[in-house]
Image 1 (tube, rainbow, N blue to C red):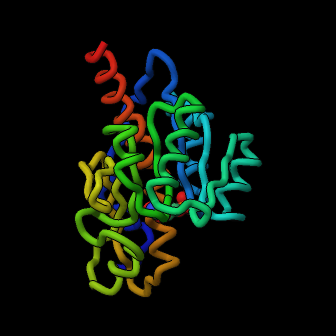
Image 2: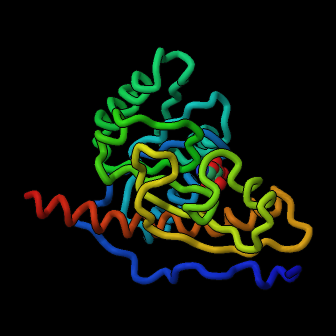
Length: 219
Ligand code: GRF
């Protein structure tokens, strides 16, 4: 296939965005350029996603997500993982940061580090991640490279709950995109990201319905 008009294969229809008793109080984690973080922010400001981003946490000095947070006026905290003796110690600091900001759920929007049960157990069922493949295929690093090397013709992205195993939690939403002739990492990445920016806010809204109804059930 070489026609960009086939650039969308199967993506979820976005229905009516749910409204909550009060906006979801989100923490966001990013290590990279931060386009998914900005997509969440845009979905909030245009009135689709009923949420607030209380804080963005980044672990890479100078990453694009920091500049975006400054431009968008969102509180950003840099946590240098190299300064923590263990992954758990770093995650304890993340939990403290999120709890101090009154965060109820956390979105990993391009977080390039393995997290531990310290973080996962602090937000049970309320820690979600976006991964640039159709899980369970191509887990881990360089999913797009893995996908191109495998010669598959359909790629995509997945939003899922985070469990201890990497890229393995229950799937919330997926979108498929084709791999076109002459694709390289950059072209395919751009096509996948277009879908990620649509999928992540929508999956967050869907997850939010579950988070809030669980809270009501627990009283
Ligand atoms: C996204 O492709 C996401 O799937 C992966 O990391 C990338 C982050 O991109 N986990 P950005 O920083 O949001 O632009």
